[in-house]
Amino acid sequence: MADKYDIVIVGAGPAGSLAARCAANKGAKVLLLERDPVIGTPVRCGEGITERGIMRFVDIQPRWVAAQIKGFYMYAPNGVGVKVMTRQEMGYVLERVLFDRYLAELAAEAGADILTRADVDGLVLEDGFVKGVRYNRFGREYSVKCAVTIGADGVESRVAHWAGLFNPLKIADLISAYQFYLAGVEYDYNYCHLYFGQDAAPGGYIWMFPKSGSVVSAGIGINASHSDAGMAYRKLREFVSRRFRKAAIVGEMAGAVPVALPMKKPYGNGILLAGDTARHCNPLTGGGIYTAMCAGSAAGEVAAEACQAGDVSEKRLKDYLRRIDDDIMKTNQRAYRIRMGIEKLDDATLNEVAVELNSMGMESLSLRRVFLQALVNQPSLAIDVIKAFV
Image (cartoon, rainbow, N blue to C red):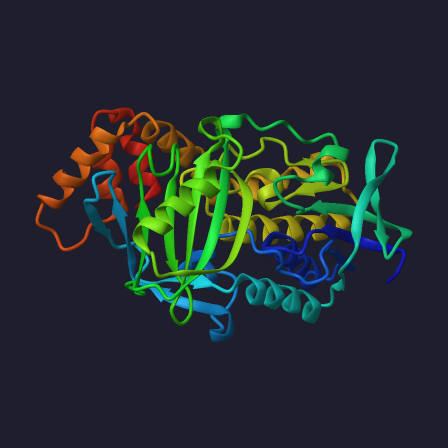
């Protein structure tokens, strides 16, 4: 590795790899650093994304598609299910290890250098600017200079802390998540299934996503303000034991998902933040792959253009916020307001909504229809719902 680059990116998830690829495509000299030995591991994700979300950035590759999905079912606490078809005709459940590696491969093909097992443990700060990073690899300390550093190191971002850009998350804006991979499950592999209710998943939901063969990912997200130590695991285990007694758990994982408003200032002198680091997950669904790619591509382009202009001040890098305004800032602000409205609904109301929707006699419904019906007593959110699910 060289000791000086135009751009150094910390974290080789979708945000980091897209940033590396886009910056390199614009002629920047780029280094992508990943702490783990294998890009894409460990997986802390439900792995679902729409077809349109992927196709905006990359072509579909069968090797990293675990399953195609036509839509999903949403179940009220009383077990009544509502069939929902998304506005995109097709969605996918990914194999994130293979998908993330593919994105990193594209970054390398564009000319970016990539280094794994590189544990970034500090920033190089000079005259109020971030001018590089320090990292440890196999017990040796290294320092690399750059004009712009992009932090894409996740919800627990150390880069954001060191740069003075981190704002503590409210406990109500954090989801505690746990997921099993289940084998031997009898399941409709054309659809995802979502289960709601304060007993099943307080302040969140349980998901069942198809994977390959007879494997599904069964996960739970619980709002941290309703949770205690181990609750996500216990609730998920109870659900699986009750519904899929013959299933075998062949893998499991845990993690935290930010469902907050996006960071107002994900930039500074010589630094940008993208993806979970800047709280770009959708606050309503917890989905973060698409928004990470949106943020990463914008960050890479803005950083490369700033380097070419010879101005990496926060005034110049603020253009990043404009570029993600429609895809992330406005979209996630609407999603956050909708989440606040949904959280006011008790189980009895959710049951009533499911019964009412099914009484319409439609084979399937749109997400917009579902949320408009659920929030019928909160008309101030109608415009948010319409814009979110056009």
